Length: 306
Image (cartoon, rainbow, N blue to C red; front, side, top):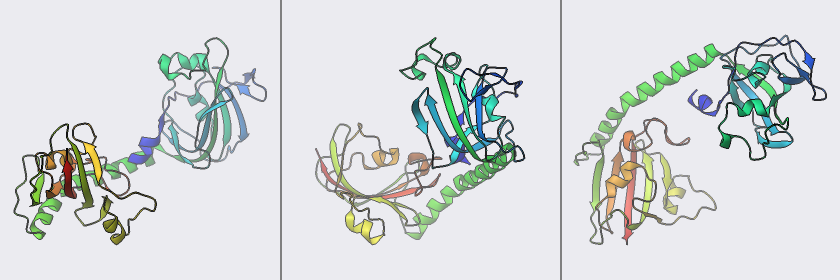
């Protein structure tokens, strides 16, 4: 559900205005009393109808006059949510006219849209007063009802609460199983120095080169700079160049547990970091390999510090 809500375009939907047909100045289109132009290519009046609060799943192409500015044709996905109207003749009125399986095009007056947008949100080719239109070509594949969405969100929230609650015990079990005697810092970060070098120390502004391997605490590899490790774990990516990762401390965006864990260590050091999710990817996780509230383990070899 979280991914669904992240991909939904937040668009306003108000109660359906009168849809008495007026003559449209766009060939082949009709126009509602509020000024929304519409044309149905396929209309399934006996299928499930869109209601306010529903999430629409399907394909949509957005054109500014004849210029395409967005499209997900060929990849049906949540495209918008039925919410509240923003101005007369807005798209939401048309969405509430749709049924599952419908194909329709809606045309919105660009000048009307500009009244609720910041100047830099309109396309650079928008010219006020020239009767430009924004076209939404929509194929509605399916509808997720508000009730279904609420149930999915409640399920997701429950799972996240359980994951968050289990994190401390997951870390404690790993520490116990691996006989780790190092103590965590005040934020729960474990820094286990396997070998201490004698070169320059990692510090802000220094250019650092490292080899690293990142795993979940169950041993699952999610990233490495070491080719042999990637191949051994079946994570080798053909075409990727496996080599030490070079970055400038303080200028490169890394998770805080990494930055904090190797700060002050000299070149030549090898260290294992056990990083709680608050110092990693937190409640968001990262891609498919790092779920929300996942503690991480990094093995890092500091090759050079300049």
